[in-house]
Length: 128
Image (cartoon, rainbow, N blue to C red; front, side):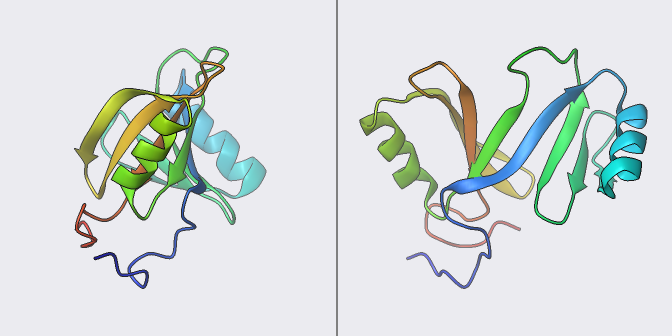
């Protein structure tokens, strides 16, 4: 069963945003200087940032309209996935694991792609 003391993340709220960037070093310099964001590199292809009220990441690519990925947090990933399906959303990438968590992607009825992630397993255990 899920233990709500595991996470400090707000359930089913926007928690993380991913952007594409033509030049990771330039974009890190910009956001550090303009907003004080602190970056952590996870290899040459991904740099995560933290600000006072937002966190996210940048990955290589050509930014285009719709290239920002809004990521919500869920304490119960599979339940949230089912609520999205029942409410008319379309899951476009089933649950997958990544270092530190699990997530899936979905489209809303307008075709906007968002993602939902969790830092806990299906049984409520924290992911190391």
